[in-house]
Image 1 (cartoon, rainbow, N blue to C red):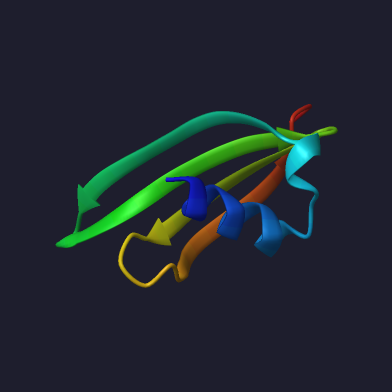
Image 2 (tube, rainbow, N blue to C red):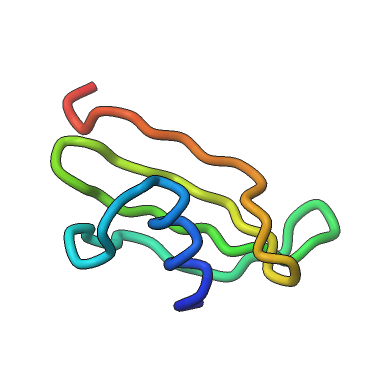
Length: 67
């Protein structure tokens, strides 16, 4: 779980000490295990899906918390 959080934060180009995690869970979906990670930094919310075995970022999204 911690590795998946680190992968997501690094992919977003952020400092891990400046994000607030709101969701981090392991899920089995579409025949694969993946981590679902969500966090907030400043006025942005980030959502990531990361393959639990390879650490590959499967999907990501960034949106303003004001939308």
